[in-house]
Length: 124
Image 1 (spheres, rainbow, N blue to C red):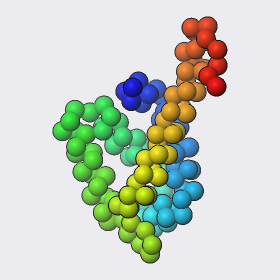
Image 2: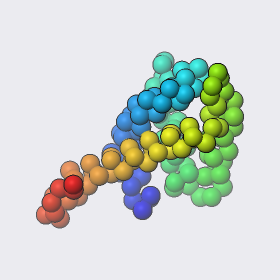
Image 3: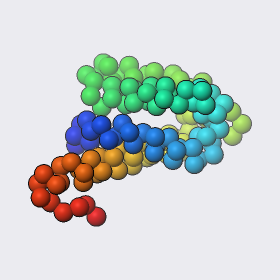
């Protein structure tokens, strides 16, 4: 199922939703502010996140493990007053925003492109 969802272009576009939701958590926002180039290169940050996510989802196991190692190595360096990117609560929040946004993007793609071809009703 995750392959079906993540192959849709709408899922990549939904990444902007995920980033905005991530920033709603003050500790995640602080980590991004203090350790990211997001302010000067938001597209680059999103692109790196998508590249690593696609490697994990679609890559062969060695490629997926390399992506996971890269994420963990980067996150180990992200620490500040009251936050750590290795905090399980923050990792869960970021993951949840990615899953939620991917599913919303997939649903939007279904409603716009696939369901009308099938003559099916809009999802509720």
